[in-house]
Length: 399
Ligand SMILES: Cc1ncc(COP(=O)(O)O)c(C=O)c1O
Image (cartoon, rainbow, N blue to C red; front, side, top):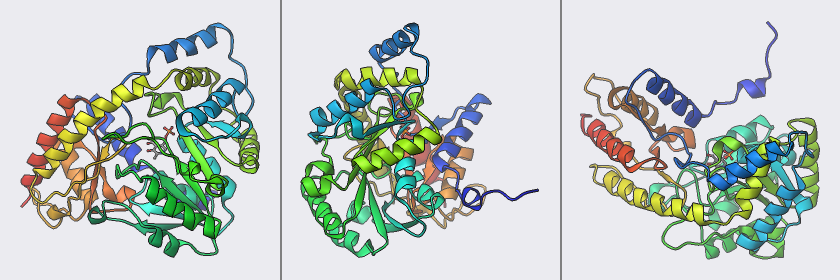
């Protein structure tokens, strides 16, 4: 048999997707699984978005569009950036992608020459380091911990930068930590990035899921120098409960937008026409929906963190944005399950919780920190109550 691409074979499949798939299989087989693995809102896409998509089909808008997306959507993104973020980027410098994951992939593929370094704060979203490696780059991690509230410092950023550094990936608010960097912290990062002429890939997908009165803030607004180095990736998946529609976007410097446009014209072309019309309605339709969703997530966040903190030995920071909790659970490593298996790390713990407690959560190892597990609270309070009972039961049964 001919050998396959070594860079593709080296890819670790997404563990969040794997856990979610396994949980769905067990559910389909009749098991009462509570799944906190997937990062998707449990709300339905608002009706006005569905109606706009249906209308586009009825109007026969079913053919190829430009590879960078329909003009209406690129303009809606440009308008949104100005209105909601105070960022001025013309529609000609926007590329519509098949989800934010695709925008991240396109940006990395466009930036990286073999051996280039991309700085990634850990814990990180599972996809970042795998894509960096796929495109021939080297991920360089900045470690953080529950003790530092999962935040990194400008000093740590500067120490991670070398002459090979192309970009920092900044996910703010963060999946999986839930942490949010404010103006002063972003200004300090911007100073370091400008000094070393390093791009920042600003993943703003959770920008509107913020708690305690926080407001979205893009690093691109902190001066012309950092704006010129900011590569915004964002989309409609989380803010409008549109994960399955697959619409994201890149917005940034003209030369990078042009290169991504060429890449898409050869590789994937554009996301489905119908999804793009839905996304226009989403972006032009106001933020009431995401704010209502955010209020519900806030209630759930408090319940989850209080429940986690009540489990002996578990440490949990209070998320400031997004919809994930990342408790530190290493207190149970080295202990045995009732069946006598030793829990060596987060993978063992998650396997045990799925098999014995019918609870699907994601091992911290997938995010670069084996001391924790990740729970998504984008699910109903009933599910969360069951989940917290099962977690407490499972963890206290370890000896
Ligand atoms: C930080 C982050 N970026 C990007 C994505 C991917 O978004 P999309 O579903 O639009 O591809 C996710 C999804 O979980 C995410 O958490």
